[in-house]
Image (cartoon, rainbow, N blue to C red; front, side, top):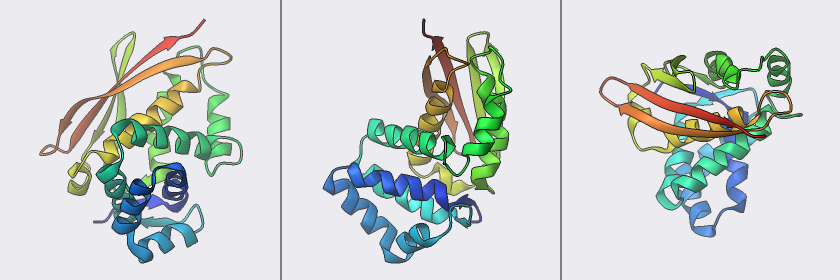
Length: 198
């Protein structure tokens, strides 16, 4: 498995498990083992670590946690990582200043931001399906990502958090779903919709 992830991304997820039920924490601990846990916790945030550690964390989560719990964990980790003081906070703040009134504008940064967090996991692009729907397409990913649904639930949570940032002072209510998953073709499609709140 050649993919890599920034340690800070996985570290935020691991820290988020502290508030989950004991059965989930035990499952994560068992899947990670002491060596991978130490790698995640002891690495500086911007260090590239093997994707295997990230996927082990996700396997441990999914053994005991619901889809809703995993998505919520990624929403919080995304907010933490791109918010003030987060490992990608400065880059996110700079990018958000250039957004227009388009509620999907934040998705323009998906290919670049994916490259900040991951290496060797394929490519990402965004397509306009209709004026009210965008599709995020992740293609050419390594086979390991097709084992289980943890990675895809992570995309859903991360996209929800990014879209929730809103445009200006207008909060948005996003709805993100996994629209298609083709493991053989290494292609996943996420449907992104937003409702602009009054």
